[in-house]
Amino acid sequence: MTATTTADRSNRLAITRVGGQMIADYWEDLFVAREQGRKIVWYNGGALNPMFQAAGLAWCHGEAFAARLAAQHLEGPAQLAGAEYGYNAELCSYSRTHLGCAVLTLQGTKEPESGVVGLHDRADLASRLPAPDFFVNNYAGCSTGQQWDEVSFRVFGKQVPIFNVSHPFLWGNKPDAGYLSGEEWESASKYVRDQLVELIGFLEAQVGRPFDYDRLSESMTYIKRAAELRREGLDLCKATPAPATFWDWIACVAPINFLPGNQALVDYFQGVKDEIQDRLATGVSGVQDERYRLYFDGIMNWNKLGFLARKFADHGAAVVAGRYIQNAFWQEPQLIDTSDPLLGMAQHYLLCPTNHGNKTLEYLTLRDCREYDVDGIVFHSTRTCRAFTGPQRLLAKAARDQLGIPSIFFEGDVADASFYKEEILDSRLVAMLEAIDIARERGDHKLAGAGATVVGSS
Image (cartoon, rainbow, N blue to C red):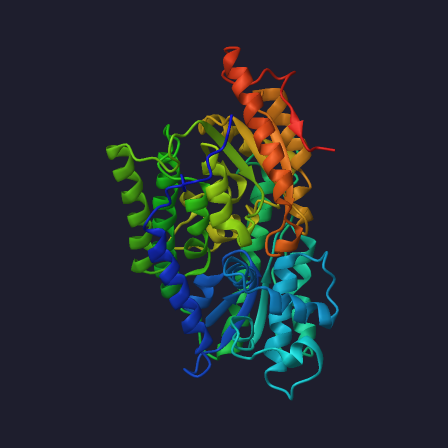
């Protein structure tokens, strides 16, 4: 088996360019929010933006801005500023990048100092974030995320109000525990819902006016419909060959994750679904000459989005599913009651992919591997995201033992390109695809459980 590198065999959805413009417009609007008289909240974790929208705020999602910098290869100045401030390179690169932005934002109001921060060009994207009027933390399943806004609070001298939403980890070990079911699920859902009621009181105090519940319902009505269209589009990609791939859905993360709930959001995801349906009708695939169907486990390496899309396509490999897109971002829209959305919102925050015990993660991963007819799994062992990488060895073993699906591991990172080792991914990917070819020659649709390999697992 040889890979063709002379032409780009990936066939990305054209509609994602529309989403890219929506995202760019959103950030430009945030950069001028203070001049327009709006208060600004910095937050991390689950999608609280509908509540901020209802409160008339402008909002900055720290992970999203760090990912945007990395995707545009502009993360360097913020990471250098963070390093000068004292943040270790092994810290989550999302948080390290955003904390570097906080340092740059704060320094922008003071006289220049020596070093990276002082020499930094203030016109750079990383330093354009307006300072927050307050913080809200809504992080589940990650100890770094739960401390992220607290550390930002300290960067700003503990002079900015902060509210923290606490999320129980869903261990799934009780006898009645199941995905979206059981006493653990019900009690955790109500616990977080009650905190969202308290958050509303906090927001009212910050903006000095009553919370607009009708506006929250309106926003969540749009978001629910967009989420339904997104799920319908994902389901269409179970077809062989797949009309769109993981990389297309990665490009759709930002709109569903933090853009305002409005008709434009619904129109965008209707456009995504329509383009996929048109591809199915006309026989257009997301990867030219699809030969393999892979599952990608790990948060996206944002520095390498287009690069990885082309690399896998060069091998005829369509990445058709992944924990980060199938099991996050309003992925269970049926839970949302738009007339009273707080419980459904709380439940989605609990459904963060890093907030489940292995029993649930195994159920979700194997379910998706079956439904998308996956030949192999690629585990992105994200160097600075222990919460995501922690269960990956167990998931690889379950896929091997129960489905006969082989796996490979490669090291990279979400927002720090220095951790990516291309030659490791190349050699391991080729080895797995060759093993799949050998199994097919023997007449096996999937590798036998005893013979399936986990490459790079030691």
